[in-house]
Image (tube, rainbow, N blue to C red; front, side, top):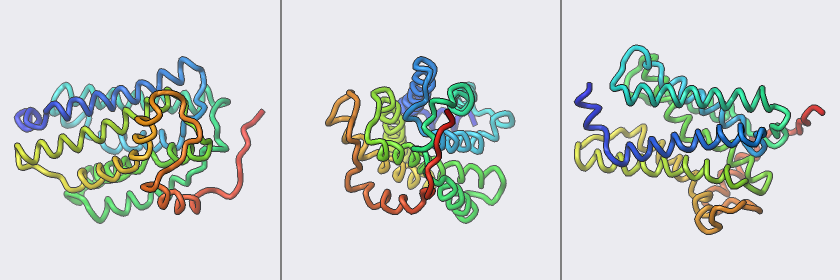
Length: 243
């Protein structure tokens, strides 16, 4: 196992992991420092918590390396800490009326797909596949929230950029491993490419508008059709925050 893990590590994998870690830490620190979770989709964070929880079920049974185990613990701890800040400590600042994406339309297809397409029909493998499929679309509530409000704060932009960079680096990691190790994982590769495409418009705006606060956030062609369909998944009523 240690030999396999050593081969799996390369500059793209490590850089991707660090970018992912930076992204979730940016979000947690942003909420804590500003004492506000305005502009953050709690629904996306719930999905990411499910992603990590179902993917890391082997945390205390199979340890490939200390690096792997430590990273899993950090991702779980930071994600659940973020959920606590959003839904409990700073819940009065949570824009619930803007965060209305119907996440069941992401959860159910991901679960069905995991039951149909997996590496092995076992609880661990099905839940792993579920986490991969769900992660590819977990950012949709956040992107939809940005499209509704029309702007993204600077720090939120950094968070999304770091997340998108993490997926882009993992694509390079898969290419590197295929060329050098003849290794490939169709489930992870296809899902990762879908996730990277979802970040395409945001990447374009981030680069062209720089790191300033992005006003009038609009989706470009690659997401217009997707978000047209997504409008049918919204709840018909608005939910007002309590006074």
